[in-house]
Image (cartoon, rainbow, N blue to C red; front, side, top):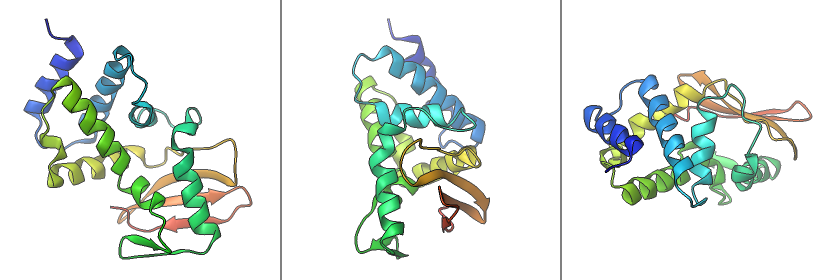
Length: 179
């Protein structure tokens, strides 16, 4: 007999291709989070982070999972690197990986393969639409690390969305128009 969460996810994904509403993104991530609780492996901590983040007004726990990304963003800003053509110069793509959710894509793809869920969400146009909706869900839900120089990272509403990085000293840096 198939796991009830996998069954619900399969039915949901087959009925909503592509995903077109924020509430569908939240439902998907909540169900994935439930599924992750049933999987004994802990290699999905990055995916778990996003599932948790989508339902919290502020993310303060389990930040260690994305600590390398936060550090990469801080390094880019502190070293005066600039953003051009989708890349930072000199090369450090941690901010881009964060904004475009490359690690999230990899983790979701692996989980869907592992439990045999429909893969249509990972087609480029569907994935971009999913990310646009996910970012809308995450707007004004900051990640607030307890350590380091960054006070918070938060998507803010704009023509699309901006990633705003606020440092403990009050300085603010924005990555404009993430989507």
